[in-house]
Amino acid sequence: MKNSSSYTAIAYLFLAPALILMGLFTFWPVGYNAYLAFNDYSIADATATWNNFAHFKYLYEEDLFHSALKNSLLFLLVVPVIQVSALLVAKLVNNKLPAMTFFRAAYYIPVITAISIAGVVWLNVYKYDGILTWFLQSLGLIDEQVNWLGEPKIAIYMVMIFTFWKGIGYYMVLYLAGLQSIPTEVEEAAILDGANAWQRFWKITVPMVKPTILLCTLLSTIAALKSFQEVVVLTRGQADTYTALYYVYAQAFTNFNFGRAAAAGLVVTFFCVLLAVLQFRFFGEKK
Image 1 (cartoon, rainbow, N blue to C red):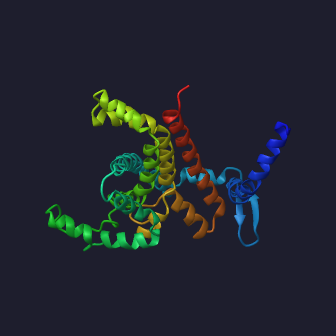
Image 2 (cartoon, rainbow, N blue to C red):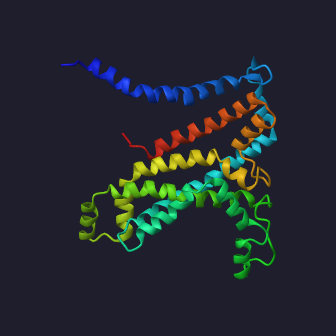
Image 3 (cartoon, rainbow, N blue to C red):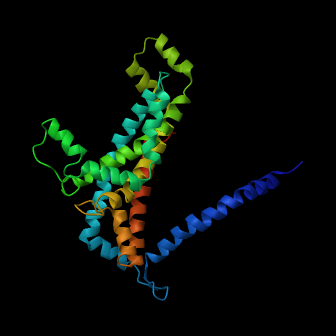
């Protein structure tokens, strides 16, 4: 009979392909990014010169990075909205009613739509004489045409609406899986005890999908802090929508300052880890 060490060796053997791929495409890039953050990197001769904390000092003093980081943190406003909405939609489509399969698919279509195509559609929605302007004018809510993506005070929120539309279906599917794992006997017992719909939702549904809430909140928080694609396809960082990850992109591939881009990337990573720890403490199991 094989001992435990043999089983451990076999387990690592099966894990080896995934670990190798993660090492090459995840751990090595992260480690090298951390190394570049403390260096001046020359793309001409591929050499790195140690500069201690010079890049971090520059970021600490630069107003543009402060504004970009503020916009990324502001993007966190979409997290509770999309999570509550996704949970409510999942609760709705979890009912066995006619055409529910269609509604599930309809909510998920934006997730699988290429962001470039979705961006073209929403650019037409947001343009001066687009659908949004026409709709609000027909309701008498506005009198003049509005440059929705050109006004610094509202542009970032317009990008958030696009993010909400693009992502709600993804989190809906995760919540739907969590809801379907709840035993039907639990809700039936609550109904027999006289619990109304709100009591069943708050006392049964929410506690039993708490692990899913943690997962979805964590994923959406990281996605919000890493907002980049939405900015590229809609505004290209203009009108006060310059986010931290767009700053990283601009420093690396426009200014070719890879060291500063790596340092900015580490700052974004720090905030991602910090918020993840706080969420685990809040939503995690209390011991």
